[in-house]
Structure formats: C-alpha cells, structure tokens
Length: 291
Image (cartoon, rainbow, N blue to C red; front, side):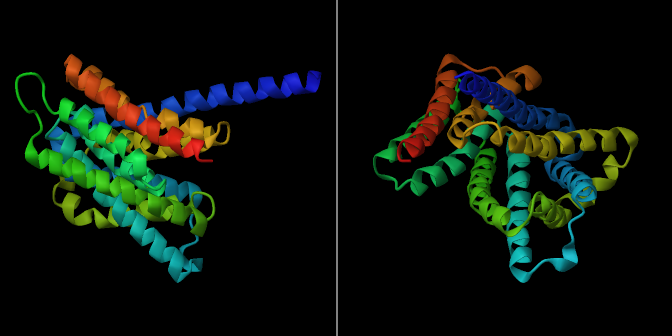
C-alpha cells in the first residue's frame, strides 16, 4: 500500500512538472514570435527567418553532430521534405505576423494541424470542431470597427497553417527514420539552405553584435528550447494531456501579442480565441475517447 502511494505521488509530481514544461515550451514559441517583431522591423521577415534557422541549425548540429555520410537515401529524403516544409512554414508565419496581429495569425495557422487531427480521426461528427475554429477566426478578424485581416497577411498565415499540418505528418516519419535529435538537426540544416534565396540579400544588415545577438536569442527561443522542453514533458505526462495543453497555443499567442506588441482584443475576439482553443481541445479529447 505504501509503495502504491509513493508511486502515485511520483506520477502526480511527474505530471505537474510536465505541465510546467509544456507551458514553458508554448511560452517560448509565442513570446519568441512576439519578440521577433523588432527583428522583422529592422531586417524584414525573410532575413529574420533565415538567420534564425541558420543559428538554430548550427547550434543543434554542434550538439548532435549528425553523421551525414552514413544516412540512407530514405533518410535524406525525409530530412529534405521536413526541412523544406519547416522553412516554408516559418517564412510564411513571420511574413504573416508582419501584417496581421499575432493572435489572429496563430489562430489561422492552428487550422492546419487541427484539420490534420480531425481527418485522421475519420471526420464525421468531428467536423464540428474545424467549423467552430473557423467561426473563432472570423470573430478574431473583426475588431468591432472593421476587418483587421490584411488579405496578404491572412494568405501567409494560411500558408503557414498548411505547412504546420504537413510538418506534423513529416515529423512522425523523420522520428522513425532517425535516432534521437538527428532528424531535427538535419531538417534544420535543410531549412536554413532552403531559406537562403529569401533571407540572404539583406543578411549583411544584421552582421553586427546587436543583430547577431538578437538572432541567436530568437533561435534559442524557437525551435531549440521548445523542442527540448516538449520532449522532456512527453516523458512525464500522457500524450492526451500534452495535446490538450498544446491547444492553448492560440490563447498564448493572443496574450503575447497583447503584452509585448500592445495588440488589444475585444470581447468578441476573446470569444473567437476561446472557440479555437475549444476546437483543438475537442479534437484531442475525441481522439482519446476513441482509444
């Protein structure tokens, strides 16, 4: 009996620490995106994306030291697909938040993985969740005075959402094809190379101590720290609980936009954010219920 109580306490402690790690990961992602506004204003979204990917790839490669010469054709194919998708997803997202509020951009982007999760469960009655999310995005797009969604910015956010949906599928394949963090390391290298044509022309503008320090900080915030935190969290909590917590991403995006970028929200926009969060949580719990 005493052993069962000790085991239960350990499980509860593990879950609690997993929840904290998960929140830390999401905070890194969303506040990292908000803090990127300064770099985007100074160097443009494409250059910010390119330098961030270069630094993230370099840091992780030094840590992991992937044995490139030993990889098979299938492993290279997996890394190329995932890396290209990561580059496109990030380029689109940074271009989106340069034009529309962060909370709206995250909510639109979230539609991608939400659609993947819904249809992977078979669709049917679960299609109510994407419909609720679309309604939430519609509410987020109006500030009470007019539509705030710059058409080009919305298109970029949609592109990022498609990329995020593809990223989930490709990440699973890369996880099976590589050991440890080797798949992520190789994919980041590919992503940095793919972003060269978009970010290199203005990269020299950031070649100063302030610019390089800013880019290194952004690279650490996203994706290095979040990935490490999420991997640790998943060892301490069930996948279902992790998925429900990640549903809070749009809300944290809106909070980061308010605190860092002074992007206020009307009550209807808050309701829109809540609908997107509820839709994501609903899909996650539906999957759990189906075993």
